[in-house]
Length: 401
Image 1: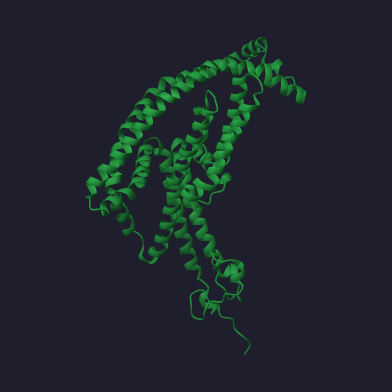
Image 2: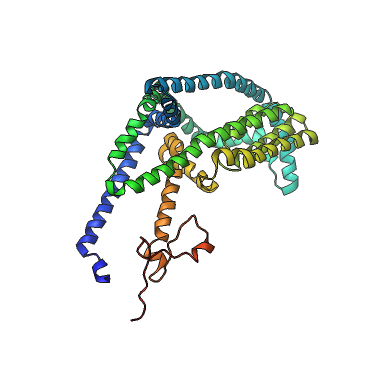
């Protein structure tokens, strides 16, 4: 039996060549994505928006409307929500940014006269000396040649940025058009992709596709709702407690809350600094109210928003989230940051599947183990579970003759 299971050298070489072929194709695809990154951005965004809106389109179809009518209704709803968000947020953020700019001298004075002396007193370091204007001027003079080279590079980039601006405008114009077509033809695209899957692997690929769809749905739909809700909670709460730039801080904290704990931590730091500068000293009441706002937001996120909207389907560690965003941006720029987390979520599904297959393999179970490991069954029940003879995965021990 063991001799029959061993592969011949020719079979091993053929398998290695097949694996090498897929590796080369994967690297070629990544290279093409890197080259076409600037023009792929509107297509990726349009595909994501089309995928997000497809379940609602399907629901309207099941209610008796035609595909074209359902697509028109969903596309109109998405456009209306975007326009309303811009009409509400742009003037509000403009006022908040103007308030922040007008307060910059107060932040500068607080930083130089309060924060730095406090740090110096605690650490013994002389930091204020390095911010002396004469020292800064002397430092600029000593590095003028390097500064001139940097300025030349900057102006050269700005002179070439006209094409980049035209490309951004073209992307903005293309995005609604591409979104409409992805909404209309999403089911057709899925059917064409499914028709190309080898029939022997259809069940496995279908299972992985369903799990990936659940993970992406939990992230893109659920996490987006959580981000918006947290941003609204923080913004309204900070504004009600009297923080002048509370809306701006709340929106920023909500937008980066997709990385666990980072949004709340960043928001607390910015809000505490803003409260200290606004009060020109230590205002215990304002600081306590700021703490209450973020505490309430975190409790709502942990016990209401995330369990009910997102659930536990994503399964990405915060370190993996940060690494995915930074790696995507480093490799593919803005496009990489856009697709980093969806790709990481799908990769997490594939890794769980690979781990499950490994735990069912002979390499893990050995030659005399009579159990089939199931990731959804606890260890106590696994110790007593033995698969019936003849079922796939059951391993028969050979007793002594």
